[in-house]
Image (cartoon, rainbow, N blue to C red; front, top):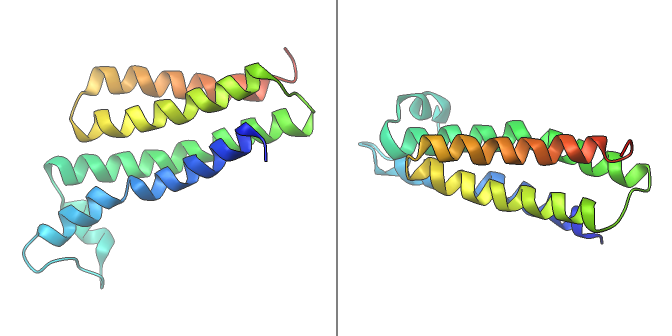
Length: 129
């Protein structure tokens, strides 16, 4: 399996890693984790729980762009260090993004998000470069 495909797998797992602090925050509330209506409970979260939920949702939102970029590069047979670097950098930005969101560092988090988005777009453009 290629490096970009491994990065797709890691990015998919990170979606669920991002959910762990959400579940922990939900479980810490009075009455514990509301498995009957978890989305309503998530909407009421504050602080770290709310930020973790937002980070989780953002992980879901960005994932299709990354997958599309990797697949566009792969199906057009664009291989090499540039595609590998972009895929690895995307995963690194996602890990940093989660940590920065959880720790409430908004400006740096947004900059890291932009770098991750740029990785996705450059992967999509790689067949043209």
